[in-house]
Image 1 (tube, rainbow, N blue to C red):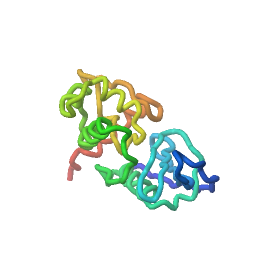
Image 2 (cartoon, rainbow, N blue to C red):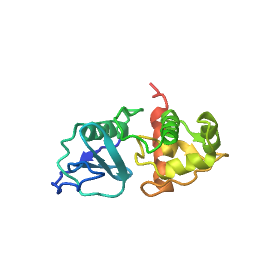
Image 3 (tube, one colour):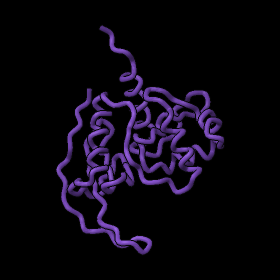
Image 4 (cartoon, one colour):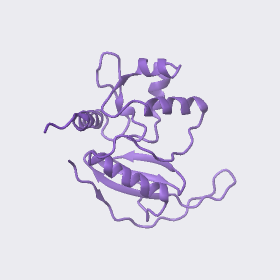
Length: 181
């Protein structure tokens, strides 16, 4: 099992107003994982983004949703969590929401093709690919589980790309296997 270490954080200035409403500084937390630094950004009531391999200026991590995301990601990398249950920022469109739900429905340790996922979501493989490329929640909305037809690895827009995708698929396959004993 991997060990996940929480990184100490520093404070960041408040965010500017967005679309006419006052926005308080988003809360950020980062943790070191086997695939690199994972940074979670959000507010008390939802996570707004997750990035792999890029620090975005960690802050005090006091927001409830950010703290919960850190706890669930630690459990995931420790092999104790196979499905995330986090409040995420709403998708930009209803179609985006349908694709997000279809991606989340791919079980831990399993994979699906772009075509299979497109059929299940009444969409197209290209739309699935675009949703994955724009996914603001890698790991939580597990685009790494989507492969081209034929089982090739395909692309991955988070972390170190294909190396990160391969590690995640292998990790989940190893973790999902029943333990002998």
